[in-house]
Length: 438
Image 1 (cartoon, rainbow, N blue to C red):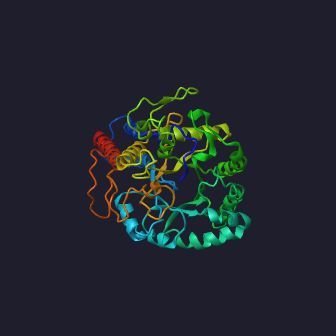
Image 2 (image 1 turned 180 degrees about the vertical axis):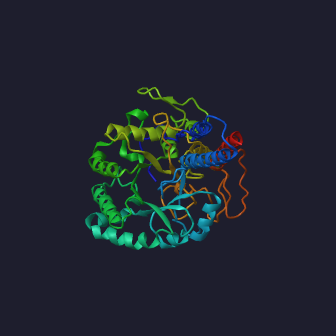
Image 3 (image 1 turned 90 degrees about the vertical axis):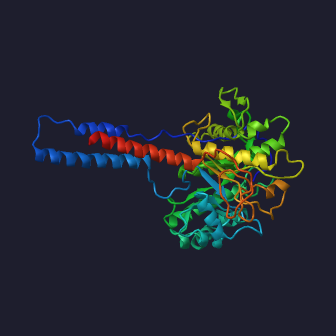
């Protein structure tokens, strides 16, 4: 998780892709009735059967368009969660799988390749991203065989029962005080990719590295965002390679950290997705009503300035602390609940950012649990959506492993509701078409 840096207004949401329709089906079905002259009963029966078969074929094609299948994807839908385990009191991995499935959270990211987690995820159907930690980056860069050994130990034996769909190489390597890993990172990523190719997994497992906001020289206004000059020396070859293999740019976006860094000048409502006047980017005239949107568009602006116009931005971490030190303004249960509820609602609505209105944003929430052994400021131990015993920390629409006394939050509107309405629309369209043909 990044330290407060030069962030100001915020990061992005999601673009609602155009809804699949059945208009094509209607046009094709109308063609079925174009025939001249009154046919005999036998011919009529045959044509009806043929027409129905044609209709069912067209309908099947429409459904394929509505629910495209591209095999295993690194990120299904738009919402995921970081499963950190720097704690001695959280549930065992098998119970965590039960919690995730009950909460319908399909995308999970961990910070290592712990075999107890990999075993627990077998047959769960959950998408799992595993990690090569920072302390291994130099070793992986110096020796390609090291990546082969690591993949042979931590990936190959678990596939396909454990759906390992992504690997992160390092975390927030660039932009900090210690840049000694920045140069090795590029070669480490390449060596891991070569290892994936050796196992024929390069098209099944996504490779990336998350960055903190500290890689940017500025992020306000969003359109002015660029990478720091000392970072760009190492960032460019990394981006060149990720552009070649079509990996997204992952950023850790924390309006909470920006707010505690400059709470005197940042409207907390702007950071929490609550009603506020927002800001207007003077260079683009785009209006931002929340910091999350602005931070993501800042990342897009930096990529565009560096010549990577088509690279997708995704969020590797975002969240809000429910408690913290006295100096950490805004760290409270109410603010954490407000941020995570509004973020979840925005993601599932698939609303776009001002700069990229048609591109859905995908985000991993930080974090699944409060982690009692983490160092640093008090907030570091209070990002969890769930308490250590599996109860919800606050109610944003999930159910914990145990009953909770957390205050209820009314009118939860998230992905499940959207999916139900979407399916209902498709089913209704099908029956309408059938009625027209009978």
